[in-house]
Image (tube, rainbow, N blue to C red; front, side, top):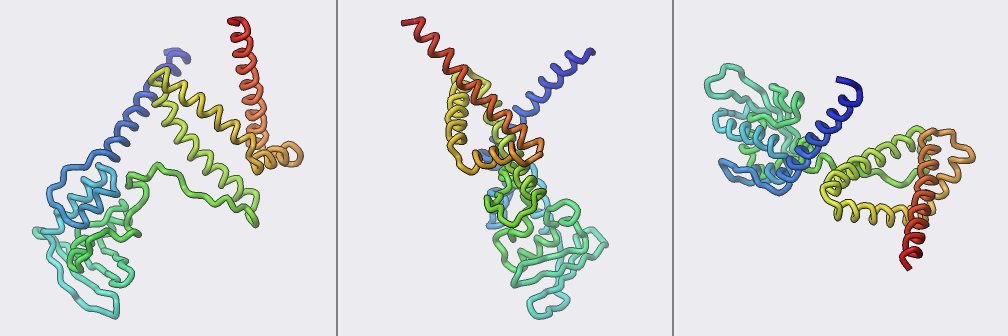
Length: 257
């Protein structure tokens, strides 16, 4: 396989994988998994977790019915339990804080995989919890995992490296969102037209944004950052391209008249 064929094959496979990913995202957000038992904590898990992670979580939740637990001692707000699964010989210890809802189990499943084990879930059920404590819902397992990190626009007192890192986070978020939009829009001529029109409107708004204009002007003078200089070049080329397109449209319309 030559280089050109390899690149074409790679692009086709990448597109297929991206479309499969979009279908999975749609399924996670709009299709409720079939659950075997309904309860407050199950309802919460269905709402926050992706389908695959929920299935794993549900297995642990159902497994807690086979867990036998007893309270060893209580020190203020901290309860210490001893738990064992039916048919197993290993005994695990669980520390649970009633006020903060912090919990730790000696099996260390949460530390390894980011999912609460059946022993911890048994302790929650023992204390009548109906929701998963927020500190035990890892973003990477949720339906909102692909939403970007919220970054403050306040830059005073930040080092140049920190500012660049913040910019990189924004860029990553925009590129991911843009990739999804472009993939969907490319399925039809009308979708492509909509995105092109909205991008042109967005560029016009960005050209009027005072902070962006000032940063680009500053970058040309004193900032040696390749990324900012590259953005400045892209800005110029985009403006020229837009002017060229407008000029071509004007010429076409005048010829028609």
